[in-house]
Length: 53
Image (cartoon, rainbow, N blue to C red):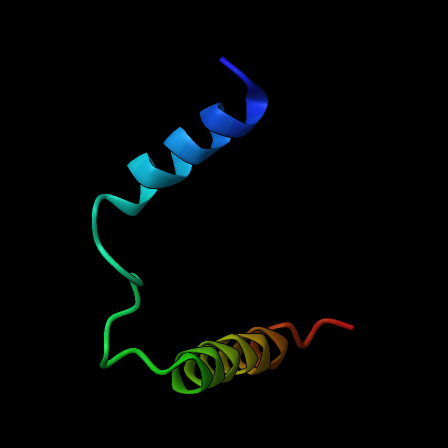
């Protein structure tokens, strides 16, 4: 079995017979923006509690 045929078999297995894989309601900009907002909020909360400088 060659490397190319093995890789092609693994890609076919990973796809699972489905085309694409992205859900229609998941917008990467909104998801990334929400994650960034949450992380910045957690950073702000952490710096507010760390007043012992």
